[in-house]
Length: 239
Image 1 (tube, rainbow, N blue to C red):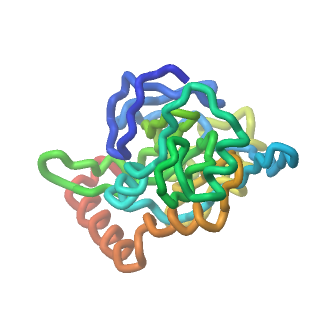
Image 2 (cartoon, helix red, strand yellow):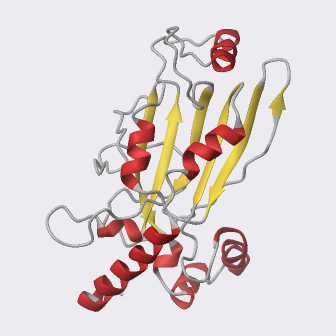
């Protein structure tokens, strides 16, 4: 798309928008409208002759924002306006970028990636706090030279299931679908990573390993829970 890029996971430029399959969008970190869906339907297809494949990355823990930013800062952005798929496939296989620089990077062959991601807060209180990340879904959108991560409204898990029902009085089938397909745990609701990658000569294992390295560790999740507990005790009116 032609929107101004916002390449940092902590981007909060709400003037930057992404085109995706939602009838409603909520670009404000403080948005309290979870009435849009954070659902995707991905087809795992392959175009054999071109070597184009896709896969969906899923995880049920948040990304550490600093580690994800460090990974994304190494993303091999192509300079050319038009990509030659044959050249791209060769570059991916040889571990070089499109300008011939030696750079073994699992994202070299990625043409398009998009989906929802969950970023852990870096600072829960004080100046520059980003505690809103706990309840806010982020939308990852990448196509060619353009990459951005932006706010996409609240996770359904930020409200109770009874409150959630109020949005589906005329469509309980969708309510049940969201609970069945999108909710990954009772603790975190639908907070999750769900990203589709489309590319030439891409390695699902290498991309998955790189993203897994950005996920919060068990120790970090213990700290996350403790920070959340203290935050909720200090600001009960938010919950």
